[in-house]
Image 1 (cartoon, rainbow, N blue to C red):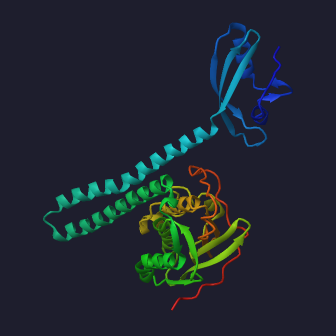
Image 2 (image 1 turned 30 degrees about the vertical axis):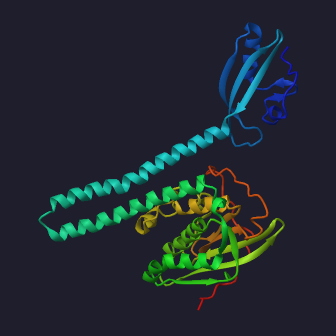
Image 3 (image 1 turned 90 degrees about the vertical axis):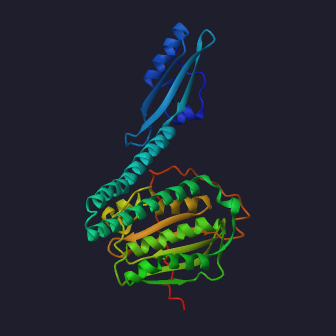
Length: 350
């Protein structure tokens, strides 16, 4: 009486049907009740994910309706991905609220301090300087939120063009020149001449600039940051690799799994000192993915890190349709360049 007449391959794959019968007791009981009284029933269940051995829950919605006098129809919808995306969105809103609250709260307190110290010019100047720092931090956060929203929602190929890699590298170096000079960090580049990628120039410049800026911010004084580019041939066509290498503090294996998440910081204290928002690498990840490429990281604690941006070369990118992956995935580990073939050490350009 409880035999399954027909089931989809997905029902078998999810482990809902085994041996010709429903294997989920609540669904089986719903089917029996509906067959008895003809009432439509619906329920949401959390089921063990079959075969993982890690106790992960599979969220499903089950709806049972009568089908004639003797049969019932059971429709099961997998809600796992929808719930995961909703959790990511909730976390994002919570993080944004927290990050905005810090500089806004500081500005409020500092403005009160300025009012109380109106008769003390030195104190006013000191508090005004702090207000400027917090205002700059707030501006950076809002701008990066706008940038992240733009790269998630816009099609970068609408305004795509061949972009010279050496120009992107020069722009990234120029963006970080003051900070590098303050720390006496040498920035060097090599291999970018004549290489071109196809995409949105503004987004690509922002992505590479974020990588170089991070390298400078997380490097000790009097060290070296290298930017090296090369062409790599793969079965799907030629790729351009741009590797940014630093001699900084390095990244632990645990942190590497989350380094491209929004608002994730390896060293929160250092991020506060440098004005980092925790969004820079998330922007890099989305720019790379929307251009049909990827960003990977190799790092060793105490030795430094290499972030590698891989993008289709101009020409190869136009000849194939780029697929846009689900960019809301923040939970899975980002692939590391375990088989990364290091680029030759860059030389300082004349």
